[in-house]
Amino acid sequence: MATLNADLHCHSVVSDGTLTPEELAARAKANGVELWALTDHDEIGGQARALAAARANGLQYLTGVEISVTFANETVHIVGLGFDADDPRMLEGLEATRGGRGGRAREMASQLAAVGIPGAYEGALKYAGNPELISRTHFARFLVEVGACRDTAEVFRKFLTEGKPGYVPHRWASLKDAVQWISRSGGVAVIAHPARYKFTANEEYALFSEFKAHGGRGVEVVTGSHTAAEAVRYAGTAREFGLAASRGSDFHSPGESHTDLGQLPYLPDALTPVWHLLADRIR
Ligand code: AMP
Ligand code: MN
Ligand code: MN
Ligand code: MN
Image (cartoon, rainbow, N blue to C red; front, side, top):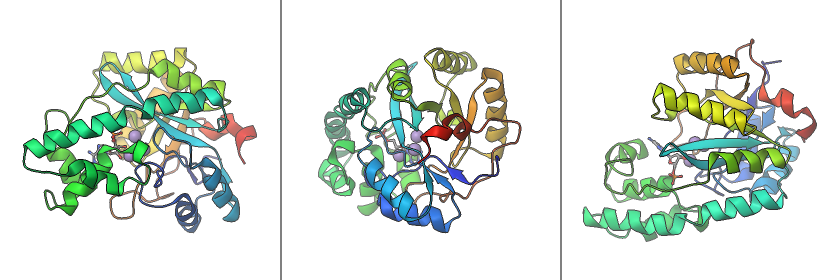
């Protein structure tokens, strides 16, 4: 059963991906995905299109979102799966979370202007299919366009990350709010790509403990953001905390993402797949 090709993490033009929900569904199907979720950042406006496209391609579907959270002064991503996409508290919460992005983007642009890269706000906005979701990814694409860097990975090394020009710290949703928006609307909350956070062992323990205490039930074990060794490590964490395991490519774009939809190892057999908790939410 863990040999289901589930891809429960990817992005469309509704946030910082470059493909439409329809293009993603077709690509997922072509890559052998059987169960799919579109998980745009802080926005569920693509869910109806994704569900329709999943149906048209014969894919099983779970609603999805990836919520930005601030925990211990670090940004953590919480994936929500199988929630009710019409839930008013979820919709209001996400709207409030998105509200800070415009001002942050203007500050990022003024820092970049100060190091000789003018016009970055307007430049990034061109890449944002959804202006409310203007993100570092869109700035990265603009910096590649103007020749400041060769690719977006280099942009994140030289700009837009802590201590580098263009990095503006931001307060996102609380862990408790994000987990509750998801679980109270019938979904399962999942800690996204846990190996990517710069936490001490104590902070990571606190993240998993508090996440569980708020009602969180899953963790990404196999993701495009984990090495094989990291997947083994977080399989252990899933067992330690009694969490179900999720699997997702975190695909953003054919040119930028090294892991394509559905093209990743299966979940280890000993773990409970997160979709076992969501059998009645699969459409
Ligand atoms: P934001 O929500 O505006 O802070 O942007 C975060 C997004 O930037 C993530 O969802 C990734 O898509 C992208 N990102 C963050 N760090 C990197 C990195 N080192 N390389 C490539 N993309 C990154
Ligand atoms: Mn992203
Ligand atoms: Mn993420
Ligand atoms: Mn993601």
